[in-house]
Length: 529
Image 1 (cartoon, helix red, strand yellow):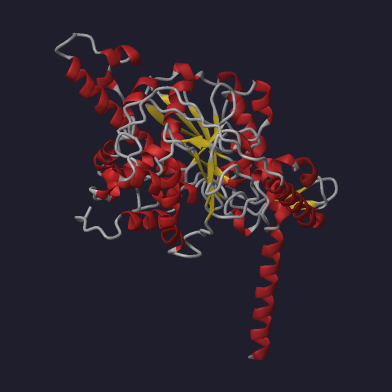
Image 2: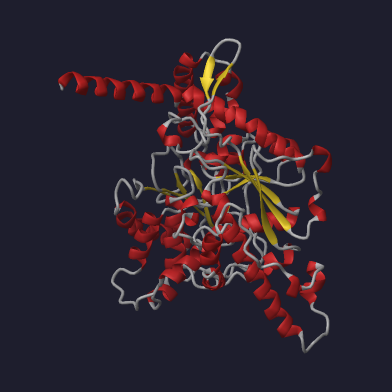
């Protein structure tokens, strides 16, 4: 009996050892590199279309992404279908409208050809936006019917809006029963989108054809001499590229010197394998890492990560002195009702040349965002030097910074951790954050709100500040409107949509949003929303 148990245990240990070896860091990076070749080939078929990474997995599969998006697979899971108003990805629709389409890259470890984010989440998103655009065109046509027999929106779109395709387009492997269940929810999701106050009007202006997803994987057959031109389609294509091979067979591949194990969807769940290596660092050192002997990969990655950490630490120690120089805004409407067109400010400096843009990473191009004319800018802590000439004060939400400021009370550091580490960390620090912002914004000072990545904690802190200190028109009122208002979840979500209109990298976690809602409604008696 004991011998049988020992044999079973040894077999278990052996299988675990083999699995760890197959899922090694080198195998993951080599698999990503091989899949990136396929992604590059697809991108070259439609070079005029922008290439987007679906965070976070998709960001590993190319070094030349034009932007990012955030569609979660959980919103497409069976019987859990959802349209997220906190992840509208409105910039994707605008970008597709302006460029005639876009290409989105993602992958999955599971034995599927496509992740649920591509099979259902994005098709739902496209359909809901199409329905909202058609509703907007119908309303505008009704308003202008008495003034003219010609619909102005029809002239803009070059098509008759009654023919605007609002159908739900799903891949063939999604069952008819599941499709019918999703279609039953579309009307409610469309109303939710319209109630957020998202700027559907500007989207209707830029989107000349309805959005429609197309799916491409490594099993797709494409005749290179028959690749259709995007302009020939009667829709705006959202081309969904699943980077990895879905072959369920174990794949061992060989080079002239060694063999390695292919991992489909290797970029997924990077915390479990990447050893703090980021996509940016990987592509900066990709040639060296791929040509290493696998046994040396872990140490080489550790050296790269440490060198990058030291570089940023030294950069923080030598941060320049911040000068009193406010950013000048052109006259414009910052109304939170979103009647103005969407504007994204990816850089605080003067517009760089094309050569500068090509040499900068995606993180450097799109990590700093001014929230309209509110005098608030959000971004990661590592970009303090980039905003030095344009801001007056810093609200640092997470880590230490060595900065020199020209006046007292211009810097506040709060040690806020993620909601997974502490469910009340953000809630306990929000009073100090809002008071600091109130002190400075009341004097018309510019405020930089930063956290580790500029995507979660800093966004939630900015949401609390915007809701507490600004009115519905986006004007600073020292909290007068907030004192008499009861903030519902929909009102808070409407403010979040305003922030995401500018900070397109925003990815606030549900746990942190709950803490913001609790803060905004403390000591208030509100009806159930």
